Length: 304
Image (cartoon, rainbow, N blue to C red; front, side, top):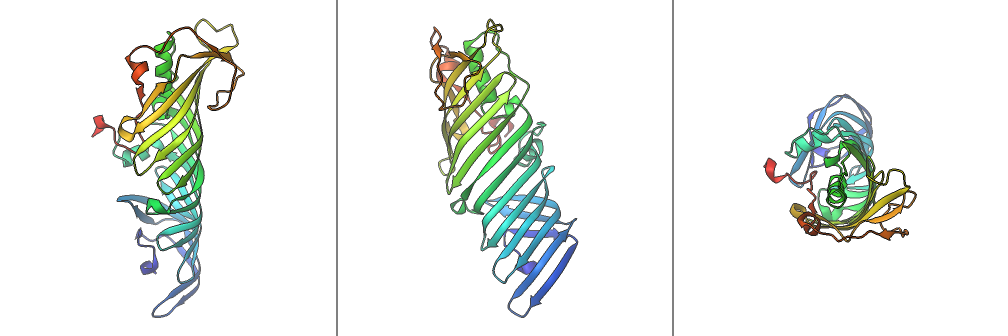
């Protein structure tokens, strides 16, 4: 049966299994169902990378050409992954892939980076995917919780920009984000990104070009509870541009901060009534922007 597994999958230790309706002749194999009952160890390869899963679970059937998966997966990075759909010739179609309880520290270590974060990642992807980016077509959501601010995209950078404009602004220690995206071949469109950390809310939208290894988008930061404004129902908004190649993504202010009501939306692209504050964007940090490391997918230079 191992000879009929996908080329990208290798089983190092078979789990406990339950087989039904096995039909085999010299040239073909059909399987009514196979249930994985725990234990086992398998590796999945794609684009030169390898993932190892343990405690395999789920069910599958094989009709001679296509594997039909139902919540097939296992333990990985301290959490769990499950996949459902039809797998044939390297492509999983009509797929639903769910991640839960993924520890960001273990994910970073797998990527050759320091793994000290307490962040927990979860998400869902629906559509088509394969070992090659050209087979990517779908949509999904992602969530990160209980992470240090520097591990939440845009939070630390926006705090730094606000600090350059408003004395006394202090960064939160932890944060979280929610994101919604669609993926088509070499392009990932992020239609909604919302991050929070203490008194700061950041929303963004944009896209990632996987072929050119580049990010382009816009963002808005909303900071509440400001020094000198504690007794007033006011916040400050900052519009930002987010752009650049993976190794030099910059977050730049598009102008000075604006005063708004605390009740005003902080979502980028949403019109709000604002009052432009006096002053200009000055200083090297504010003019050149703050660098946004692509921490999850690229090894940081100081760690190489």
